[in-house]
Amino acid sequence: MALRIYNTLTRQKEEFLPVESGKVGMYVCGVTVYDMCHIGHARSVVLFDVIYRYLVDSGFQVKYVRNFTDVDDKIINRANQVGEDWKRLAERFIVEFYTDMDALGVLRPTVEPRATEHIDQIEALIGQLIDRGHAYEADGDVMFAVNSFNEYGKLSGKKTDELIAGARVEVDAKKRNPLDFALWKAAKPGEPQWESPWGPGRPGWHIECSAMSMQYLGKEFDIHGGGADLTFPHHENEIAQSEAATGRPFAKYWIHNGFVNIRSEKMSKSLGNVLNIRDILQRVHPESLRLFLLSSHYRSPLDYNETSIREASVGLERLYAAMAALDELGEVDGKAQQLPEELIDIRERFSQTMDDDFNTPRSLAILFDAARAVNRIATQARGARKLVPSRSLLEPVKSEILACSRDILGLLTEEPAGFLDHVRKAHLKDLGITEEEILSFMDQRSQARKDKDFARADKIREDLAERGILLEDGPKGTIWKVKELQQS
Image (cartoon, rainbow, N blue to C red; front, side, top):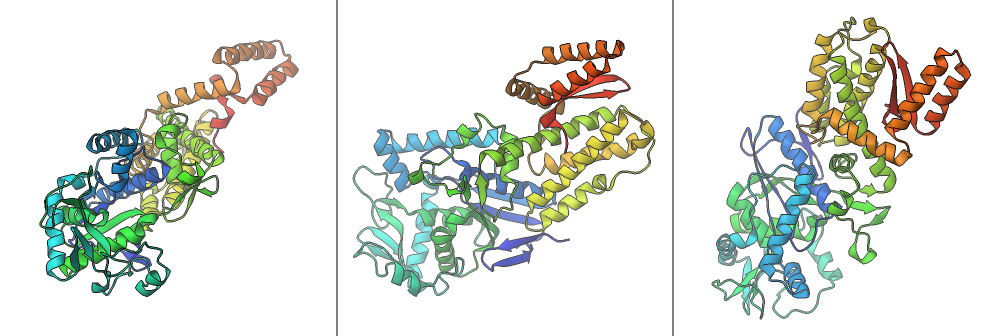
């Protein structure tokens, strides 16, 4: 099955055929660095991290470019509010961005350009637009003439006449058309500025991404991505100015991820429900948050609530429990010569789901099915070994699960025993019981069984179960487990 991607530009799934066979150029709009990153940023960055990983894993030579917007109205306004130099503020939040994304296990892109380091390229691109009649000077500003590009609106599906009719824009004598947008902004007192053929000033937001993407990927490249909120006007404007300047198609495939809602409400500063990544990671394991972000298809809205994040945490624990079980089964030489179907062709079935427009929920379902099968086998191993698949059959299972989960989804990066020990201690703390107490009850139960006081032995088991602790008897004795960590 060939990789198929939903292309926002054509509004349909298309077979992925890169501009140059075997190579992929991908540009993703990065953050404007004026504040801490929130969960909406995390969804976009993690999604494209997974896409990047999967393309590389599929054998493509990938050049992944993700920018920083480090000069912008928001940065200038925030710097003025807090009394900090705008450049120092931008640098500070770039560091904070890396802290959050490193915690989430996000790989660094091939290139991470900053707008302020590409002023020459931006000015050259603006000059091309002026020369071709697509831009005009206006009192130190340079504006893009939307009417000069006949295909304006092809990405978002918006019509220029409808946009003009419904536009709520302040009267700007500099604009020939209410939809025209700034490519270059004339300098204002106290703001950062650079010299240009049109006088001192700074670049507009949209032109930055066109200049940086073409600098590293060429005039036409494969994938352009970002959040759905960027479709219009940012990406629409990128297409207009880029194709107007070059006369060629810009990006071939456009990928946009859906919004993150908070408890069924749109996340916004006005509602006071913006969740910063740093705050979430104070109480949620980074891989749990990563799994949550991948639990819905990337084009669908994603609702953050306590139930969903808890389910993600439990799911991650079950995956780690399965990996620990596989380690234990490596010491058991089973007799069965056939694997359950959930453990056959894991990698192939996983790739099929990823080839279907990066369907991570279905990909995760394959891994969870495999984890359930592993845990059933581990339970059987405590009884009759003849029911357990042979070691030679089980050995490839772990490598296949890790190839899918760790290498592509960015999960299961820790050593299973250590992870589960940490989780177990956290659960015991929540349950209000210590390991010492559990072992004491187990000793009491063992003595009761020796005394043939089976009623008391059963009562101890039941009491522990009510407190969230399960006892399992096997040939090697009795073991205890936290109920929440049991595989369903």
